[in-house]
Image (cartoon, rainbow, N blue to C red; front, side, top):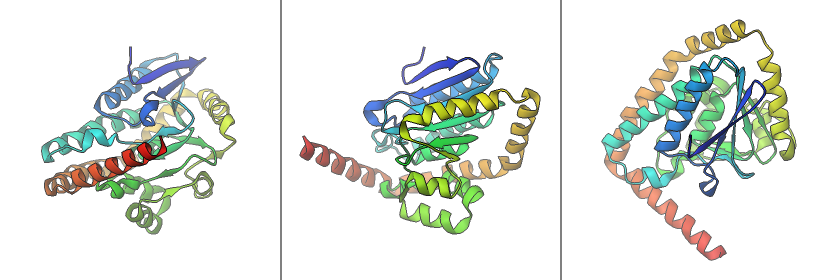
Length: 259
């Protein structure tokens, strides 16, 4: 049914696996559409009481945006891109069921943002997370808003402007990873947590999730609206396209040298 994600279940827990391991599960428009569609369907499935999201392979939850998609955007396409994100993010936020992130590796940029939209995060020491968009010339709006809600202004500014990636231990210490376990135990712990959440009274779970949406909706909408405005301006200058092409060329050179 799906090409870029895989769905499985363990009793009343659904497991959604991001499935583009050849590009570290980086997403493009077709993958984002599949994720949004799956979230809507899982939310409507009465047999499912909790969901786990993870990545294929052992290197990445997701590397975030596939730069091969965005390197040629113009301002209008950049605005459409943000609306595509709004659709996917909204499908995640609309879940009445708990969502656990099994962080089996790197979660960068938009994947970091998706991880922060989940309810509980399980990772290991190598689960690197961060907001490196600035290194590719991409302005950030949703990521800083999410980090502001969780970390405060000072650390959000530092992480956004440096684009540095945090190691799993730091993520755990500041509360972004709730359970830090050995790499081989990430899925086992995620299933344990998801089963515990699945056993909670479903009406209370649904209403609690709804209330969290209500208290954050204005900030979410503002961040996406700002994203459209800022990406139009940014892509109009040509800077993101140029920076992404340089980044991809440097990455290819490193790969060629390693062969």
